[in-house]
Image 1 (tube, rainbow, N blue to C red):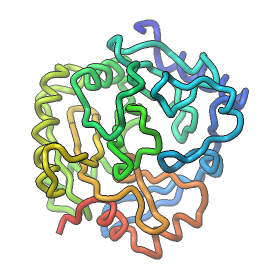
Image 2 (cartoon, rainbow, N blue to C red; image 1 turned 30 degrees about the horizontal axis):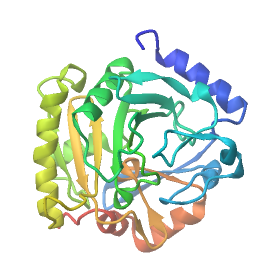
Image 3 (tube, helix red, strand yellow; image 1 turned 90 degrees about the vertical axis):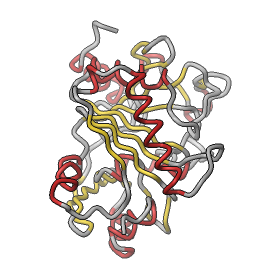
Image 4 (cartoon, rainbow, N blue to C red; image 1 turned 180 degrees about the vertical axis):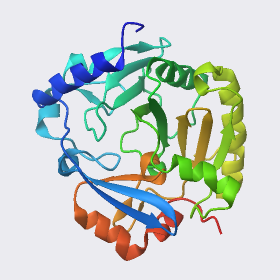
Length: 286
């Protein structure tokens, strides 16, 4: 894995895009505000090919592809998607449906692990290894369908940083700026690349306890939430819904960058009210 760098994985990504293995294309950017909170809608027509809900069928090309393990609902149509392994517990792979160039997946080698479970020590070991390998990327986790996931084989994603609204979110706590939804943050004394997985896990567990309190759920209940790992910061966002009417968002969307296949979905957000959508998907801040 040490011989991997962003130049090499971007070259591999471009090759697979040129062969139509990876679905990626140009996007139109529309910038808005949700009561001061910055939003960017990336309108990507190629996302029409992406499944947006758990159980949604993929295109016929995947019928001939192998699944990512016996318990998986994710497919590997080309072995070149796999870049290597992280921590001996996760495959590091290029994502099939991309908005960023490149966009990465970390899938558990145990294909029976599920996306509705909280992150564990091995997940953080893999995530921190990715951050060390690719310092310009951040890691997200969409926990459960209410948290914005569309596949149930447990996986994290690597995206190009920083998260769109990250700087605003940092300033919000200092300047009392408005954010429509509840969230919890922890800033480590060093960057996450220098932190230990056990240290990050301990903080995460404490934030999940607070998330359960906000959602008014018990310790055995599924706890829908989003996770962001960037720079020196861990963010956990409690989630109530994956969709509200015609609007949806995963972790990236809650962090200000919403991926949609057409402008009709932007108009739906506008009709409902940008801040209202974020409040419905998350937990209202007031």
